[in-house]
Length: 303
Image: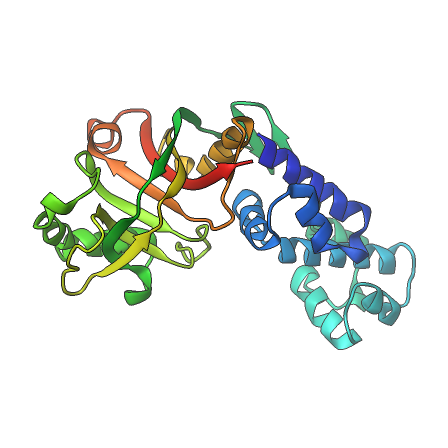
């Protein structure tokens, strides 16, 4: 799982030069544009790259004050803070006390330790949790432009699951059935989930659209939106796991790693599409199967 190895290298790089982290160096090490990699880091580590660096710097600062008896103002400047008051606010967020009141006991309880990733082929371990999922099928295809018609989170301000409830509850699926003759490759699909970013603590990425693919030029029903999905090379994958959360939490890592092994790379113009099929997903859920399969699409290109 190459992306895990790269992320561990990034973590080690941060640890080796905590006070002068260079984002350009991180981009060179990973070979991924820093904007995209920051999203990947959040997805893998469950914390943003900026927040990770900040917490590790503050932990180092506490160690400097507690063990090295460094002056608080000097430590604040070394850690990149313009003044001691802003440093104190950030310090209190992590340690719950101002710098002058840090103790060894508080340090042990509140210090933010380095993240360690373990890649073991069929699973990876993050903070002691074993995460398992596997790729059933992966193929590459050159596609034409398509029109995604559906509803968008920005129009409803709801979580991912709630947006699906809106999609079916307000019968937008029925509206799309009326355009069935214009659909592209949707015979086994109850709906697509299109996202331009990874899921955050709000349950949504930057943009999440639920809908189906249609021919470009298909009329868009009232109350719905249309988005052109540009043609090009895509990785089409089937990922199997115990449940939907396990699949979604691991699919990018699995797919991107296998894509790189096959001589491709995920396109920097990133999006992903979840394809909820009747045969591999819905029927398995209804039967109560121990595992389900979710289909995916991600743009890629030759490395």
